[in-house]
Amino acid sequence: QVQLVESGGGSVQAGGSLRLSCGASENVYRRYCMGWFRQAPGKEREGIAIINSDGYTNYADSVSGRFTISQDNAKNTLYLQMNSLKPEDTAMYYCAARRGALSWWALRYRRPADFDYWGQGTQVTVSS
View 1 (cartoon, helix red, strand yellow):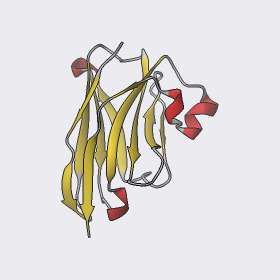
View 2 (view 1 turned 45 degrees about the vertical axis):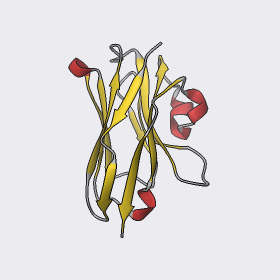
View 3 (view 1 turned 30 degrees about the vertical axis):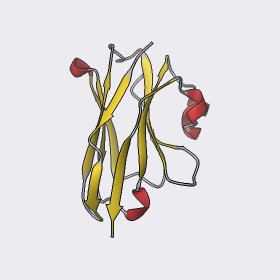
């Protein structure tokens, strides 16, 4: 099974930027659907950015236009570029993988239950 390790979290002021990385233990390009999720204290885990195995991306409205998901296939690494960060972006961020593609219907909902493999998470804290 694929193993995932996140890095790049930290503390930043509102308006700042961070780039999260997720290293995979095997080649996931075109073989896995990959995603970024986050969970704030007292809240449910939510999907914020997905890149399907066919390259199609989907974003939560709360991050659309500010966050960008991408892959470096040569490095087996998934990225999340986060710009214009807000205090409400404060959360633990997780990378996740699912073998094969998500259906167009499931992709819209970005549900954690659709993903099988998870990293340990990296904390992002945005201060006002």
